[in-house]
Length: 175
Image (cartoon, rainbow, N blue to C red):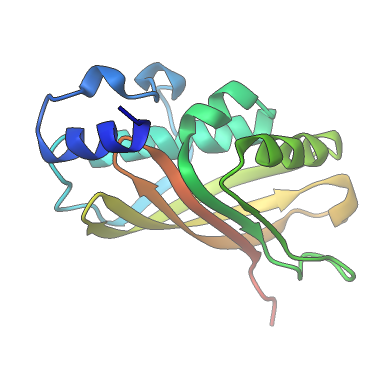
């Protein structure tokens, strides 16, 4: 049984196939330094806002440490990751689809430049079936991005029991 099918069945039927989830609760630390805002009501059976928070926390920790195993566990099998192109002059848009190995390669390249995404808060936008949409607010810093952290926000989504499905990152435009 595929990871996707197992996770979707587990969301629909409480307790079924729960042992097959690839994301271990121990992957997330016990403390968060960021705020949680918005609507998390209406989680499907077999999922919860708490589990979504653990996935989000684990994904950002894995990104910041370039931890390939944790990043693989926290990322859904079918995913989209992208960064906008206006972080610095001459920057280009990056999009990575469905290949964790390519995502890990990108994360390691960014880590070599000292990149850190410091999550400040997330705003949830409610469950739609097995998906929970959220907007991360964060600062991004790296040696090639200048001397000051750049505020950013994104569009993202967690899939029940599968992991982070979408992470689109962009700078907050300064007026």
